[in-house]
Length: 287
Image (cartoon, rainbow, N blue to C red; front, top):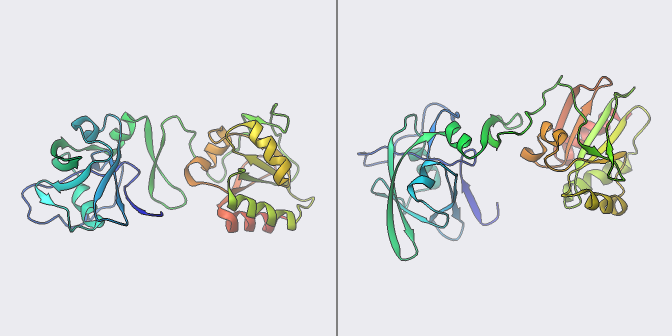
């Protein structure tokens, strides 16, 4: 990420500390889970400085309740200076298995301020901010998503075509097809999506596969303008970033382009992220 290294886990970053130790504790032997404890603050470390800066705090989390604010620069943790710490050392110090207390000393303008707080469970921090924590099926790690987001689809799940608008911005849906369906997600602002579209157009869709493009631009009017300009292959619909179909196929969590192969009876056979993965899934079935 240009200019910044993000110091966070699940976008909930970490809170914690052990007191009475001269050195930060060793890394945890057990992997991260939503049952670990943190403070609900996100730190960034600009490339131009070693400072740990609070990017934001999560509503109702320990850091927010204690008074930590975006823009604060972290000076000390439990009385220990973090001036020479790499972010991995801070991470190791912060993440804990129990709801122990921690004191952060920060610089805010010309002031030096200290805030004492008690860690909370990550799953509780997420719930307090209207989020839930789930596993990312691509990376195997964890991520925070809106609490009311549709659960991600798995292979074998039925794909529901709800909340779609056609080229005229009128409600539409898709019945089961007599051949497999390749679905790809794109937007007018997405350069990799345009690369995928160009490669698909060069490898023209054949009769053995149905192709549906799902646009996730901010509104249907933008979708219509993009259709005229980009001319993507296949049937085209607009679903919006937060539509049920994009949510189910992890668009809002993983990014685009994403390609998915759906069977004749409407069940998910496979999905792939990125230009290479999506095009490979398309070309293997476009024969």
